[in-house]
Length: 163
Image (cartoon, rainbow, N blue to C red):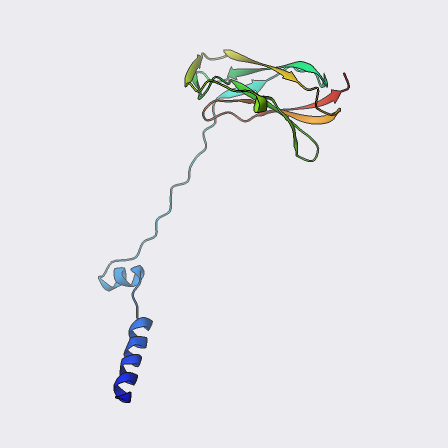
């Protein structure tokens, strides 16, 4: 009886050690095992440039943050807004912390909207901001267009001054 149990244990170990995986199966039937990788993706950026003529100094108080989204291509471009929000603004301090976000205290209609820009045409985005709670200092102002597949945010160094 002991010999039978020992033989069964040995067979179990042998079968477990000789297990098949997908490569072995493919090789066993005369096929080569292949690995596939996803094709490289090319990131296409929207042909929109964000530009502003904001001063380098803004008072800590009510200000108007204005920028233009300009179609820099030779073809019309359709901007798709997933809500009533057209743009956003953030103030980022030297430590990378966000000191202010324009949209943080606002609500927007959830409605898909489209706007077509002809070559060279611009969409002006105006954000009425209240920087009263922002401490005076140097910040990076990031202005962004809130569309599907947005262009890179515009970064502008500013100094927030006491009112």
